[in-house]
Image (cartoon, rainbow, N blue to C red; front, top):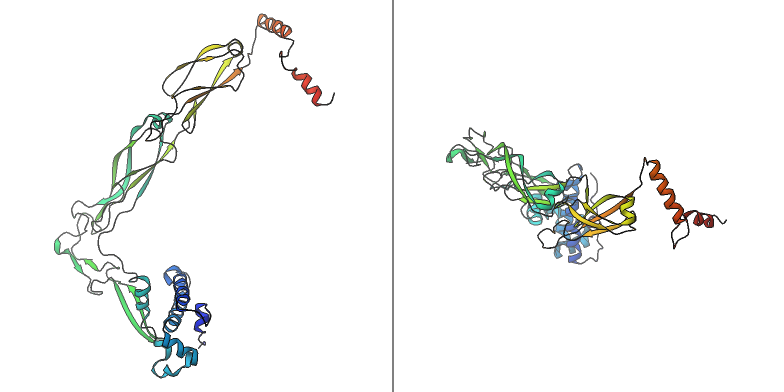
Length: 368
């Protein structure tokens, strides 16, 4: 049989540690080594027992004094030694974890559901109502979600007497070790159904498909989540239903792009319109609008139309429509058009009145 480790070493504290330091060390180690937190570690329960044994001795002034003087083989060995210091594994569970692992036997709230919904940019801008179809479990109408056909159909579990757990006490060299397991008869519920509902076979819930209406407010964006209270899955044993969370995704638009509250749109214009200026018609989410393009407009120039963008959710502010123009180079020119452009180029000397020509700038850059 392996020798017992020093209790101070088990808790990782010095022999001069205060009571508060011992308590802090114990709480930290107990949570880290709890068997429920280490389901794949077969040694977790043994470590947990060892930590509890060390704490029960070192947290008691008299027991600690005796342990410091005599160690594990102190004068109390005749009555079981320090191993009897803690009255049971289950008792420590109850003190440290507030009552252990007993399952609730009352109503339990249902699970929340998530639904992903794709909408258009126009629907995001103006708001809309959408019909969705949701598969979920609902409370059985026949039994009201209780799973029994009659009032007498639910009885106390005869094995655990309503506790939902079975406690077993075992005498060991460490003293009495109490272990708690879920009741095999009622599976931790504390009650058993003797007269199950015929409609739901005692489950209290039935799978159904429901059509729901989702109201989408103006100004939403991708990632916006709408909560529909009570539209999730039904609870257990008559518990309230969970919620349904609708997560929105705004579909990409063929013409517009969103930038915060602003709507961006690229509009092509002709060389003549850019050079001489023109009044053009541009699209917006709210219908076509007139826009004046001044003479000499260059590709990439942006113009803003106020209050034609996205509304601020739950606010009064509106974004703008931003129009970015792109000057289109003419193709497939007639000979007359080419001749006019040659005359235009000759008249302008192929350079701006204020800037050097493109080729002159390249020549200087290359050092020539």
